[in-house]
View 1 (cartoon, rainbow, N blue to C red):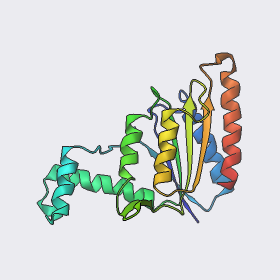
View 2: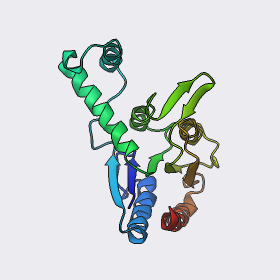
View 3: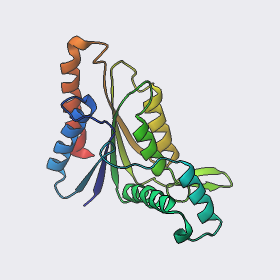
View 4: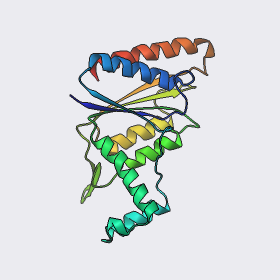
Length: 206
């Protein structure tokens, strides 16, 4: 049995979002072909997500200097605990699927905040005399992204996600693009349908 974490980074459901429509098709196919696995869905727009702010930076500095956790302010304690919970949930998952739209050549800000929670020195990567080393060599990741235009994986958002997971040591990394719907609106339904079929097929062996 494996744990698979599905991270959804879109405020809308599949009724509006193409990335969510394809992702939900992947989930249905995955559950059908991996009934023994535990599937956890995390919608970043339905939860409280910590950003790296003054409270967190000061709290980490205090903890590193030896100050006990209980000496932190209530706000700091809450944010540190919440931040760590996302890190732990990610680490407990052997497989991870991340789904998002391309917004202004970048990922949604909430996805960036979540990615910060999984980029933690000593937990997902470490510093050595020869540079940083990723610690996630055994994890499998799929990135699903919907683009109105055609980028073929060359856009800054997908490149950022790929670069980050490579940095963290993920070797089994895959990407699925749902793209060109705004570039060719007359083919939008066909493009989404093809991506759904591809997602369902990928789910069988993911």
